[in-house]
Length: 322
Image (cartoon, rainbow, N blue to C red; front, side, top):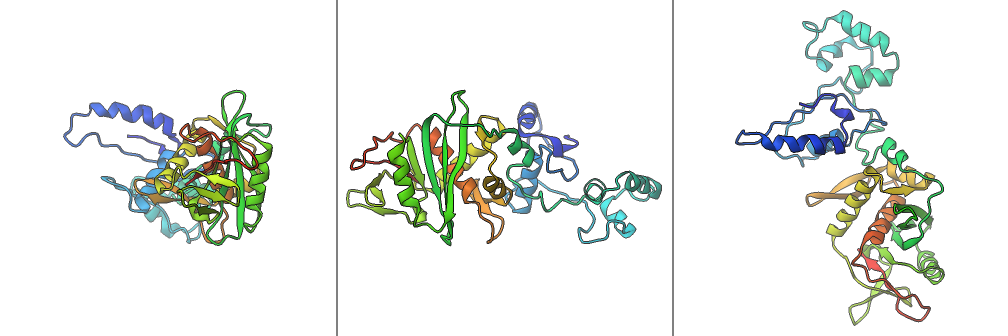
């Protein structure tokens, strides 16, 4: 039984759950996770993931029971007390809840701790603010395996180019290199960047519509950037997202704390890709291109199967298409 599960991080869970392999029951161990809705700063990845899986129907052999007041009700509505606390009024008397409310004067705290209501601002965040803040470094810089990645949303209203690579200390680096309205600027910008830098790879989503297929099976970005089709399935996008998430959580990556990326992360959600997931927009108005571009850039930089290109203005330029 895991109490206060809203502060149970993934690393701790890995260590503890492994011990349940010794359970002698024919169906294995029964794991119970109990907790209150987490704060934005809580390391609540494990708790949130279980809730997300339950609400999206992805949970297998699991039950999610959420006891809470009506989110639209008045915070001081005593009619909600029996709904949010099944032990009221027999085991938990009115005086106890009045005392709790007196000590939790802030409505957000009362709604979370007393009424069991999940804060919609924090609901379904893939990477919480605390974890993201722990790996920020405004002075971070990559020196090798420099990789660019491009992301374009379906409406083609904007495009983002991110950079990733390895730092002198061996950690990975990600940053938003450029973001502008429209997509016409992307190809000339990337070509110019390739001329100035020795790049490990350029990663672009095949569905972005920036490539053309040649008769020999290779692809071109623009007129002189040859693209090797190295990854064209959703599986690779899921792997890229998993690696990005893990790199943030284990502290092996650094970002430069850019406002555009922070906003993109706050409105980024998950969409299922088989048994895994990939980035999805919170709503149609949300722009997540900076975080998607950084995810693809990190995947390309870490990918040893990408052919390292020899960049020449008239020669072969290699990129990775996802």
